[in-house]
Image (tube, rainbow, N blue to C red):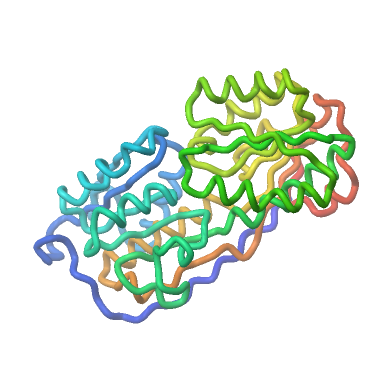
Length: 322
């Protein structure tokens, strides 16, 4: 059983933004899609949001896809390529891709989909009045890390050492890890930071978990990990390590997840992109934030690990996978 996210769109002003390089709305509009990883689950949700705003790919809008495939240092060149292509709007699917897009243009509208504070990262002036050429959706994922650690502690109370899988290429990973330290100290837990930005790194991280007898694992939110929502739970199960994830997509095979609905957020970013295609200025579209979060528990995964989910967690769960 799932409680649906409730997301409120605040209607922006009706001022217009120049459409395309020539300003002619009769031409086919082009959206630049700047992805930090490879093709994944975000595209259908983005296209659905676009369609809700009246735009269908191949009919009245084209989408130029650029994928970094987990190699974040490629993003500046990919962003520059979209600017050279003179796209109408750029959608950026992470903080790293958004920073690359922002550095590439100050005139083409950018709709971001990030897990950080966009004000702190200099993307917008404020959430309600973004200013400039950027707006979008922001979910403060770093603030959820201590909550996930608490859930993992409730689930595996005897665990003393918690592994934290982070992508060092993510510009926010260091701050998120530091924010986790006070919560770990309060719970009497030791943290084992496991950096991973490539496939071999992930293999090495799980080898470290086994070698150092890490009791449980927290997977930090990152597009590179999000694109491996089947692989990571499978590896965690193979190594018999209880793991908490940041998105419900992992819970189909993983033990537990807590976070916003990424599908809902990406759909909203698609809708915002459509509104800009219609002429609304990015500065007039307030940054949207999730108002609800999903706790998903997988009983089958728990049974495989020999764990009993505490009744308090089951009572709070938005979805329980039998």
